[in-house]
Length: 272
Image 1 (tube, helix red, strand yellow):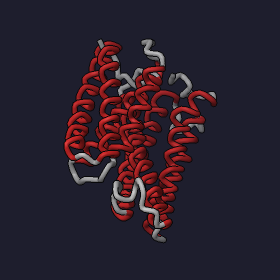
Image 2: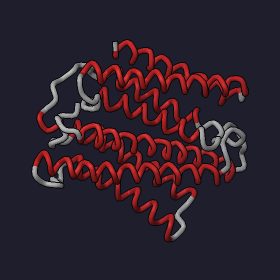
Image 3: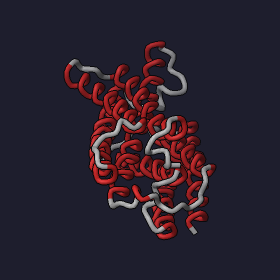
């Protein structure tokens, strides 16, 4: 049942992304309303899919690449929708939904096989730590999108060549504020994720920190975003520098999620 719901979610993501891209190209207000409604429906279907997977496997479905990446896409979707309820960012969906769709495609290509949980994962900390860490990545991906949009908009303004993006993207100030908002939430969640992971490590392995490759790269990623927020508050790092740092930080977050799991041996290597 969960696989069928997942396929339905994947199809919904593809159609929603197409709707947002059509709106981006044609700027038809009716298509914008259709795309927004479709994304909300997609988020609901995806939520039901995750619940069904939970009932099927008997534990929080965050322990394989398929489950983790699917939840990552879910976090992006609901993070974006939470922003939509607060304020409007023109054509943000055209940049966000393709990332969620790509993640769903990756999840679709990953093994859907159900494995018995290793003893270390049989803990109440699993849903707490893993979900917080992946939700952090969701908001950091929104900051990445805002950073890319900022650089595209800035380039057309500086070159005085007002082409595809100038009239379709928000102002530089709005994009910078969106970047800051997304980073602030993502960094807070990342900090909480590292803290809960340390507590769980103490319970499972007797020590708060092991310098495991995933722990190390999580710390490196945390330091990148900490530096961005510190420099923004102290020396006024904003706009272009903040956009570039958000992109670099997201690359580090993706390496922590995938690169470490597949390239480096460690106590987190069972995620997979």
